[in-house]
Amino acid sequence: MELVLVIDAALPEPLHQQVYSQLRWAILSGRLSSGQRLPASRVLAKSFGLSRTTVTQGYDQLISEGYLQARPGAGTYVCAQLPELLLEAESIKQLPQSAVEIPLSAYGKRVNQLSLEAFKESCEISFRYGHPAIDLFPVELWRKLLSKHCRKTTQWLKYSEDSLGYWPLRKAVADYLQQSRAVRCIPEQVIITNGSQQSLSLIAQLLVNPADSVVIEEPGYRGARHIFKASGATLLPISLDQHGLVVDRLMELDETPRLVYVTPSHQFPTGALLSLPRRLALLKWAWKTGALIIEDDYDSEYRYGGRPIPSLQGLDSHGSVLYVGTFSKVMFPGIRLG
Image 1 (cartoon, rainbow, N blue to C red):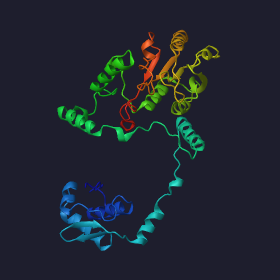
Image 2 (cartoon, rainbow, N blue to C red):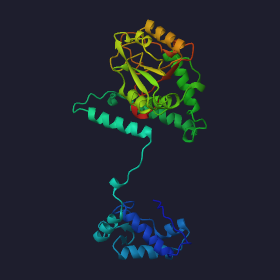
Image 3 (tube, rainbow, N blue to C red):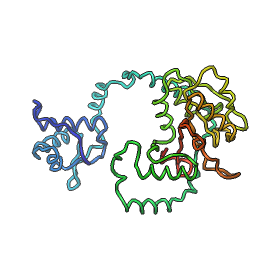
Image 4 (tube, rainbow, N blue to C red):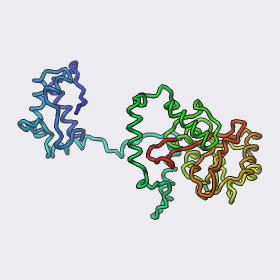
């Protein structure tokens, strides 16, 4: 274990006293827990460029005051029971957490308010979605493939030179999306994110100003709703029917929204599929107005009554669709890959 201490020879306090004071505070603050073993005095002295005598003096004072215990042949340990009076004195000096108020930005206040609203809306019965059948995951196969590819290269251990993500992964994602989802893309257009919610958050930060309007499905994905509200956007809910978003309602809006958020391949939470005529109508409307469409390709990989439906982005010829996807359903959500 490596201890982090700040020892400064320029200070008037003797070096052994600095060792004593900082170790004592580390114990009282909980950084060093009861029963934890300390480095040998020789090791600690070498790591801080001190003489062993200096460190030994500090250790001896802590032992005499009941903070440390020397066990012959085993080392030096933090005592299980510490001096209660000193612990009480130190706790009085600490500033209560409730007295520290950190001012939030306008964005932070909106996020905080949304969190409070979500808490108030919670109920005792959980209808939580997105939990995979972990017991069916091929753990042994995953372990073998992971071991196989880790032996080939260690490049993935380094910082990626490209902030958009690891290049081989972006290339593999582009190939996969072209074949499985008919997405028109090249690796240079792929950005790896920490799940689909970060993708939506980045889009909102880059494209949405406070008071801009964003169309959302009603009912729809609450996570997207919170992200757009936190950005300061004005939400415009559009109703659904058995064919998905009612695109005709967009024509009735008094203003052109900045974004339209849709889940066309498997609407959340109704499961409706946005029909081909509606897809084409939505694209033509976006081309005409200049609005941008966010296609959240939620749960598109699973079709039990026919072939998977190609992506909306694959039909777009004007660059009006931002495609968002995730591997949470085909692999596992804990990987947080979007």
